[in-house]
Amino acid sequence: DTEVTQTPKHLVMGMTNKKSLKCEQHMGHRAMYWYKQKAKKPPELMFVYSYEKLSINESVPSRFSPECPNSSLLNLHLHALQPEDSALYLCASSPTGSEAFFGQGTRLTVV
Amino acid sequence: EDQVTQSPEALRLQEGESSSLNCSYTVSGLRGLFWYRQDPGKGPEFLFTLYSAGEEKEKERLKATLTKKESFLHITAPKPEDSATYLCAVHTYSGGGADGLTFGKGTHLIIQP
Image 1 (cartoon, rainbow over the protein chains, first blue to last red):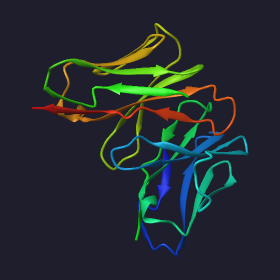
Image 2 (tube, helix red, strand yellow):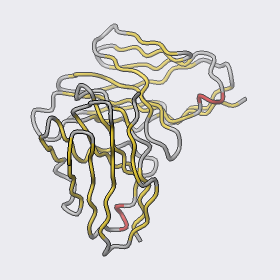
Image 3 (cartoon, chains in turn orange, cyan):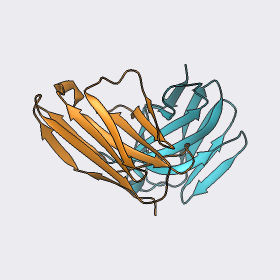
Image 4 (cartoon, one colour):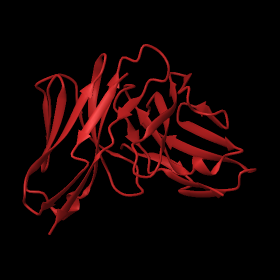
């Protein structure tokens, strides 16, 4: 079972809204990730939670904030987003901190 | 800075026409090279992991190989359902900061019946 579950599948939010994306895996993986993918571009790493330690890609703006309530769950809190933040947000997990297994993504539209 | 370059950007083949996709990389220390398949609007689907030069992996019509500077994804007698974007990614010794995968821009593969 290599399933990573993301909810919701689609989200439309206004620039003043606060919303959260959720990601869950029950494979016992100790590393979880958020990636952002714009249309016709490759995924770009945003955050890593590995063995309860958070690492941040320095280019990610503070309007994105991750939360890891436990080793199976990873949330991404969104606040005051801009239209250019519209993208496919991908969660992934890894058993080794190397190969990653991705969820189906959340398609986010900021209006 | 780690770089991953995939070629061609797009490839159109007839059903049954074998070909290869290329992924060249310039990294400071390779921990692993990965191939993924991505369908439109979906998350990447894991295909292969390669760790050292000379290594080969196979799955159905796909075969991945690795040298010290590049990897190839060979597709043999493809079918229309093999149409997708194929992504190459590397995991390197980053020396700090966020530790994840660096992706190439992908090859958009179309198999015509």
